[in-house]
Length: 91
Image (cartoon, rainbow, N blue to C red; front, side, top):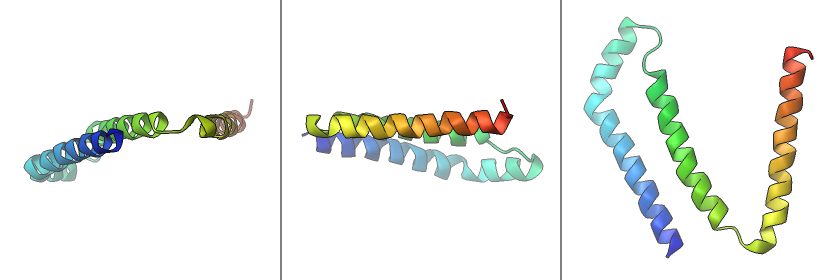
């Protein structure tokens, strides 16, 4: 049942993004040619919302046996990102 709910939520979000793109795509394209930035906020916010839904359903569908390895890899990736950020600012 969870898989069906996940696919339904993903389909709703994808449909909303497609409709938004189809209805306002021409206006966005015209405005982007006039300005250099375009609509970065809308694009980034859409990616953020999709990531929230995907992350939620991925995390809640993990079996308890896989929880510890998943969290250890997540912590390792986070620490690599922090070290990279520190090296980038040369601290």
